Length: 355
Image (tube, rainbow, N blue to C red; front, side, top):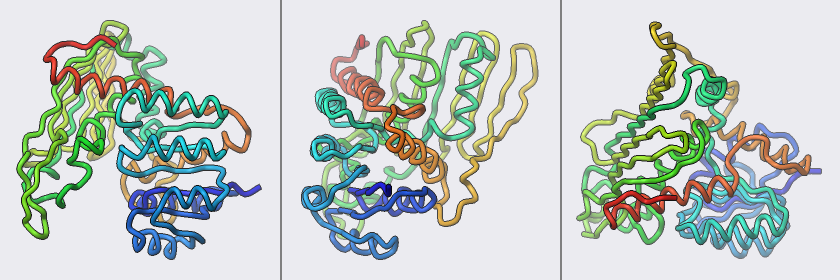
């Protein structure tokens, strides 16, 4: 049986989902929806999708779908997810999970009530280098984790005229900001590698508030965080520190350092190389190539490549009527959302927030 798939959100569909689905057997993307009908139409024509819409409600009403993939602004994640689940579809939802813990809780509740497979698109769990880090940590190769340090620095939001007016990524009311865009990924990786989180302290700040439309120069105000930093107390007593900036003058990319009682792991984002050393030994360099990297038609970048393995696992789980063997479920999404919400809460209260 061919699985029928619908996608809401043309931009990420074109960049990642649609190229990836071309390499998965027994699936057909039958419909795509976008708020811009021309975007939906051009995407449908490029990838030979039969139906296109400017209304996700209409797409769900007019199609019987096995799987709905949601790649929209965050404020639409819960409404689309709930309607898709109640229509009988399994759901893959983009990160961050939702606008808040209440929405994330409802998404999980309805998915379980309808016995549907649910997944958050944290595709980095499927990246071979991060899988190797998980293996080393799980095997005890670096002992007990004492400290994780993550730095993610870019300049995409530095210029006041770098964004279009009311760009949703810059609006708190739509779930934009660095915490959702990147922080949710980092939280998910930390939980996957090292276990649950006990408490949170941090700040989510809007540094470049006064902005101008990049085409018309019309003034507007950003309300979402463009710079965030937070500390996480891990259940094992260790500490994780994360610094996220979109307003730097230079792009440094992502750097992850994991310090254990018996060794150290360093992951460089630009090269995707891992430095690994046992206590008292010199660092050795490793690189694990994604088997999907050479597939035809995929866009460059680990996000667009790792999503192939994520979708294969999701499709297999649907076909075999089983739970996911690997990947982030709505349960993970809820726990990640709690951390994101707590950073925002800590920003206001200026204190540690126990989870």
